[in-house]
Length: 303
Image 1: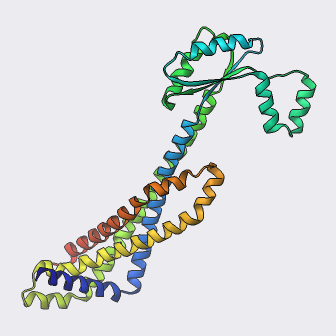
Image 2: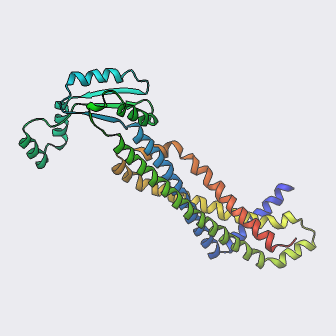
Image 3: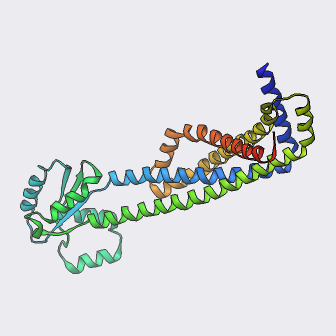
């Protein structure tokens, strides 16, 4: 008997949903926009964090020694640094190897060619490329190098430059998340108000039916349920449409991310976590619709 009542109230809510026509369409459109903005913001923030972690894992410290420091001395320093537990690996790059790499990557650059011809000798340094066990340890390694006994033999360390790039990326991601979430919250509030008004119109148009239902002894819950189901349907349909738009966005925009990132970072994240929006969005949409209906019922349906 209870299942039959739930079915009847759901069917009545579905009728109200269809009957509202353009109001339903407007409500769903605003909810789709809100859910889409929020989903894209969260996805970009999450993917950006993962991409930043990938960049940090590829980060290293390059130590460039003074030109008068001999190769044997650099190798001696390398042996000393290999004793540090924070250091995962150290690669020695001789000045000749550094020149070969420069010519391989920028050998066609006319300015570089002319500069090398004018100098006549190899102007590059011997260097050590250090990779830490954990990216968070680079700062302590950098401080150790600058205070070491061989600090006066070092020409430069590139950690500060890399650190600044990482910091700027991090600030950009934080700003993007704040702006996106603030915008999404504004649209979510608007979607709640729109859904609230749609349910309110239904309550107003059926006020005589509610009076009759009270007279024949219908329970309060039986009277309220159709409006609650109506709001839930707004949220459910909006979330499904949002998932469709997200899928299309991913299909057409993911190839572009490979051009800028150089790896399939976002694609791998999407494959690993596709189930989160598929579950979370419908639940969020249903909750928003139910909340809007409950507010409207509390205000306009005096039982």
